[in-house]
Length: 319
Image (cartoon, rainbow, N blue to C red; front, side):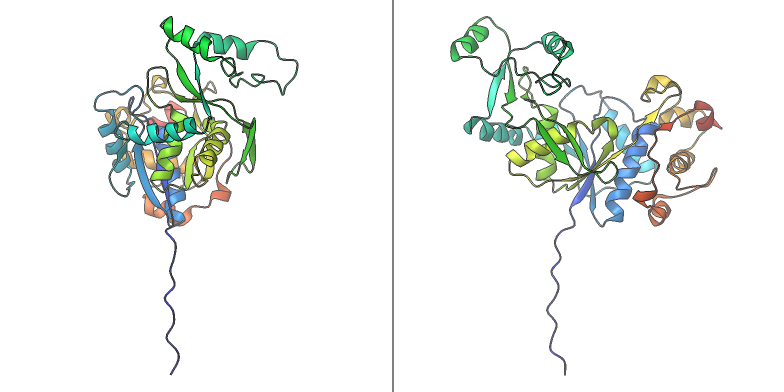
């Protein structure tokens, strides 16, 4: 008689996520990124979460329409949808922990002042501000100077006192990427937590260890990974995917015609057809083929994904 085997304990597989801002309807480029995030997560046995990043501009009803569009494509998600606006206490705690360690300082720069500093000639490419990063204008303000600005009614943001100027992150599609780390904003001058802080805190709190998003956010990854390390949060695995562009080579936007599910449905193009078009742009479906997310999952190979942007032509969407 053989000895009893010891049950194997497996660690949680983690989760991926899609985190739109509910400022309007999703267009086909957004939906393409959502599909990729779902495929990356499900193909690796991860959960898939949806989070509404609603700390900035919010359009009434947009969140509900975005969720309905994801469901119309056949994408499912695990657990309730999280809203950042309900998690402000977590952001405050993270900021307090950094402040207690002397890693924050108030900043009174206006957007124009920052842009002027970033656009000024910088002969030395290693000089702060040379690559558009914040040049540290307010980093050395004395206590008296801080009080003087506050007394003048000038609202202040709160910045990270970064200890490095570069950080490297792994990316499944791009490879190792080294980018700038500056004194990023942690809390805006209106008292609201900044995007870079909120996303790091939320990903860690939700057990998200895989972040799939558009490659326009690639340069944000080193800043966020560094901040995560400072906060003793676990690192995430990134996959920055090519964007959808219009015919002029600019990032696709709703002004480019019928590019949302609602607009396409009004033109006689059902959600299933849109899913097939998106899948075709990824090399996962033949022209005109009707597919489901479950079918696409069996075909999904990250190494075979196209690395060039998807140029969206209205005629192709409406054909």
